[in-house]
Image 1: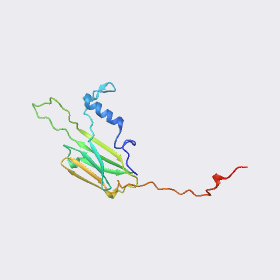
Image 2: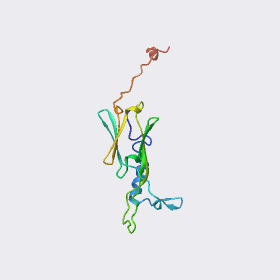
Image 3: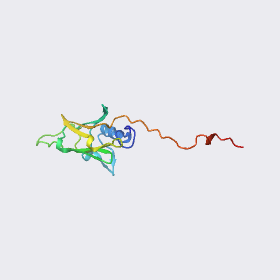
Image 4: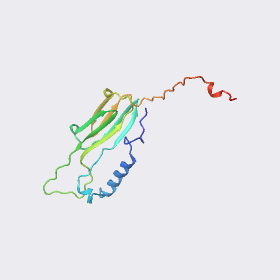
Length: 161
């Protein structure tokens, strides 16, 4: 089964992407329940690259400023989830921000893997702020299996009289 970038809330979700771009452009000023979201810590999600490499599915997540111990990877019912937390830097006394664009807090990215993915085929490495999750054999092309129809092939051609 091939991974589709347009299915469900997997790798690409147009609604969430539009919300993310809107929040980046306007600083999260959309109103929810009569108060501004900008007053609360803004959520963030790491950027992902998903590619196929030698029959494997490879997911690379940018996690700058995140410690390896603060990242969790789970696989349940065919769904791979990368979650964790990026802690905000403590402000030093007498200092303040002119601009604060970096996001902090918890994050979670989930994606459906091809049917039949084996949990033991998943490995992960973290280096230089980039998490790489490799799912061995998940990108192997699986052709559809043709099913033979049983029955008498001449029944549809019988003449009516």
